[in-house]
Image 1: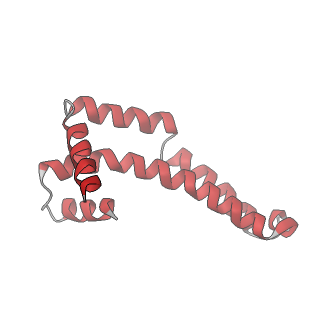
Image 2: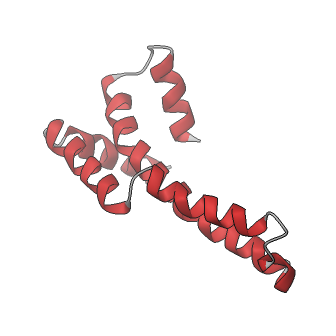
Length: 109
């Protein structure tokens, strides 16, 4: 939800510099997480149907194939990690400062 809030602020040009840094860090992490979770969810859904879930005449195997391709389209794990590193270096570490200060505030609540 935090990512959606940050995207909304960025779209309306109301984001602070700290929020922009946080957004740059969270976007590739969200892409990675959702792509990996989609595979797990589709696989579990397929298993729920047992042997029928693996039959090609249902659309379930195609859904699993599409989720597996999602992680390739959004960027492989290595590419997304390189993007995060590039964000860190480009901001001269400010991205990490914002991330850790936000995490610290969240844990103190």
